[in-house]
Length: 144
Image 1 (spheres, rainbow, N blue to C red):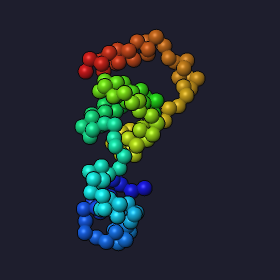
Image 2: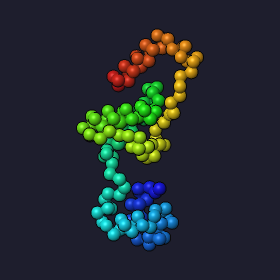
Image 3: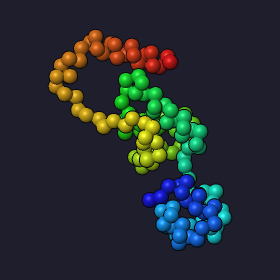
Image 4: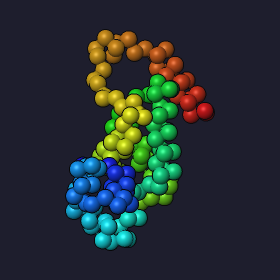
């Protein structure tokens, strides 16, 4: 696996493809294919559902969630992504692969959490007061 930016850099360089393969960690066959076909240079990698701006907006939303006490789990991220795709008028629904690619690109910027089952002690301390304060927090988040 190689980074998209590495492929772009190596295709635009004047290095021999065999030497560039070891230097940039990009297969020589990919370098040669992209150098031969100039139309591939503009579309390196798979086409994305979202533009760079749309994707950065979605990541910003995910970055805000921990500030308000919400954990970012794969299920939460997929639900938000599905709603976001619908709001943009996209007919495709994001799947686990789309989420995995997002994690690989923005893993350092987002605090991903693995969902744990609720412990018995926490379950018993979940009172009406705790529930109502959670909904007040949610209301404040939605207003903001």
